[in-house]
Length: 220
Image 1 (tube, rainbow, N blue to C red):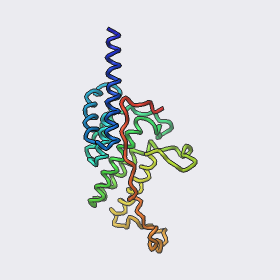
Image 2: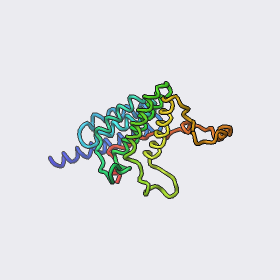
Image 3: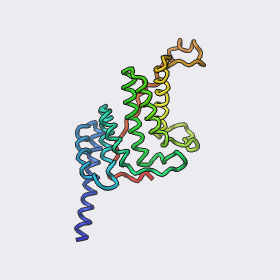
């Protein structure tokens, strides 16, 4: 009986891993409907145990990629509730490669996208609140200053996301107060005459969130 049970467990784990990799392959090939179908199916098979969060995380990430933002954020919020919580490496700071920070990074991106939608509608206060929530979601996963790459190249999505959302939050606050969001009282008034200075930092596309395999690899 023990051998049969071990074989069943091994078959389950191997099958789930192959299924998840297949879904990830569909995602990379931009076959998002097939990827979503796979992740939705995997939810039933991972509804118990420590890996419950992964299918919600992957489905939410896929929905964000398809710009089904509200649905994606809802799935990522569920993933955030289920993901094993990381231990603080220092007060207010989590291990940036932990499972929790993976979810925080994509959920923060989704909330930021919701803020972008509100900003486009002119709902400046709603946009401000969403950017503030995204900023709060990302802050614990930022890289400590003493661990930043000496080359200045940053691969931590929480760092990039925090910088973006902070800038957008400030602009939304200015819009809400009826001020010029691009104005800077300390800036040279003639600087705007140079076209090279008129680039909108928000026009630079943000990196897309990506799903993760099931079962997940040990981030440590």
